[in-house]
Image (cartoon, rainbow, N blue to C red; front, side):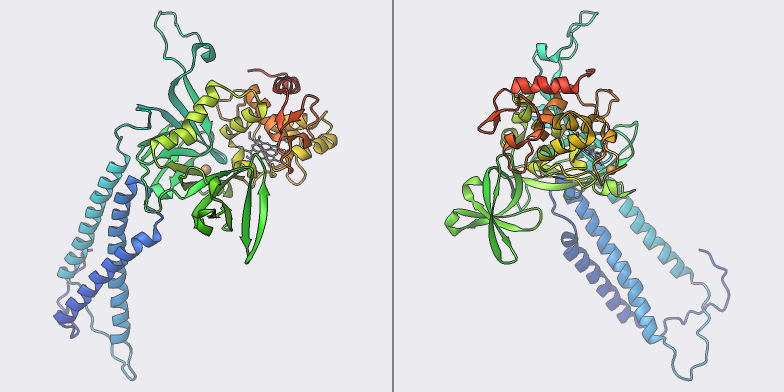
Length: 507
Ligand code: HEC
Ligand SMILES: [Cu+2]
């Protein structure tokens, strides 16, 4: 920034500006910065829902304050200059020729440098403390578990490797190795497409991508980390209870909603298998009814007895915005108020489903299907999915029979089997060439591998998805598909029929 100094450098260049006005301007600048930083930090950022958010927001406030001061300084001087040194009528003189000012150069080099150095140190301290390993990571029942987050075009899945041992017979593997040493016992694991945690749990995710770079981002936690092909990355955060508390609950069908739309009220009934996530607003009519808000923004009234355990829910995004698919690649982080409700509402049930799989293939499938990335592309109201890449799977049980006729497979169940194993053989009208991944028994080490038992369950579950909610309305065309009280009477027969339809299969 050194400039050649000439003798004619003008030092009379205060232009009649007094020290007092400089001080007033400086004070105004500082107040402006502090007010903007203080008032807007909380307003423009989402809820502070993690321990990490507090330090991050503190840093953001410092940045916003300094940024606002610089804005005030630059724009203020510009405005003053425009007014004060404006061209006046008949003034044809040049401005004073000012050339170089060492003091000024030193001041405007040292101040920004100092600010940048301080910000760098501050940022490093915040980053260091937010990403450092924490005590008791992923603790459940007093022991750590492993949580693997996997990104795949275009959905998230989360694998929980628990601290519960699989009984030896189920583990299937020989536990004694050649050298006589026992290998580590196999643990119960299960996969979900929403991430669950409880307030105060130190979450540590091991992240892998099945294909391209993805970027894991939960704005409310203020954490973000890329998933890189061939490299495992880690992200850490600790959800906390916020002022808003735990406003969400899941309504379990059957239930009636008194929907309010444009000032009119309308009762809508939901069937057995419906699970609807709503935000609880408050009780009305002396507590008998509860006002809730749906994800669509509509409000409704529902019987207060139907309000189950509550939790907080934060959106989890892919911030790798190259192509729209990543933009639609989102899921949710569910934060339960404490470990007890986490176990009751989520963890224990999932572990139990692995240890004691239900005999009914529909129930097996309802669990199994959430382990795959289907939600990223398909809408299915019963499971709260809203993917838009593929056709909606609502009522697929009603359509399957008809589609079987037009595609030449023997029945609706086989059509669904083929749609999952060989999607490109049976394009749904209107979706020609829109690629659904092949889910089959070729173990390519991604989560598109599907075991035959998962496939059978998922097909049975999709066959049961009828508009009426009555599973006997299914058009899947299975002989053994008989039901009583909307439950299959001979689940084993349905399983073997589906097994025959999906063979040959290599496990
Ligand atoms: C990458 C997006 C994507 C993913 C992931 C995905 N699908 Fe699809 N799916 C599609 C598209 C696109 C179609 C329509 C084109 C076709 O038939 O191949 C489709 C069609 C289907 C159909 C036929 C629907 C009908 O109306 O006839 C079924 C059934 C289906 N998918 C089930 C699944 C299941 C189960 C999963 C998870 C295991 C899954 N899909 C995962 C995109 C996806
Ligand atoms: Cu992505």
